[in-house]
Length: 202
Image (cartoon, helix red, strand yellow):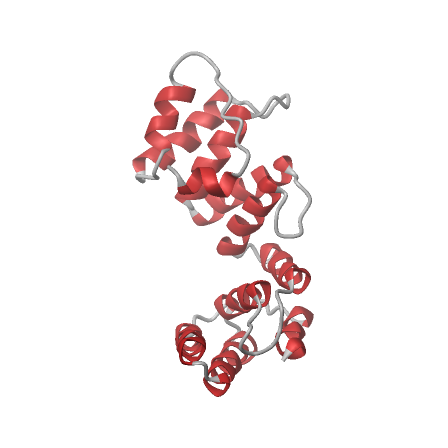
């Protein structure tokens, strides 16, 4: 089963057709793991591949990358971050929003097999916001710009645009951050050690 999902890394389709198979496949995998049935898990995995290849479903591709990243004790394969990252990066090139968001967080924390790169992460979050209207990405991009000491990054008008969008869309922590760090009139660094943890605590 180790190579079952790795073949996904060889292909990324261009068009996107939404498929109900992805949700069904994930339910089968979950149930199979809960009852300890390899056959049920394998059926779910087969459906994911069908969604990825036959139906050109990038959701199925993305969920496959998550399966590879976490591994599966029941099926006998360990976590394989390298294979998962190959899929994730190819999805990013397709401007697939969940992949943009995940990759950005990995780059901010230097986690998941990626080297820390705040500038590239900022570009990903801003693409996520501009192309897909992702409110969470807008919030993170605003914080990165406001916290950054890199010349040209701390652009007041852009920061206010991003944080205002996040606040208007009720992103947790956005209103507090705007009041305490953007509109307060003085700069205070958050010194975030783990962005995933920080966001989860908002």
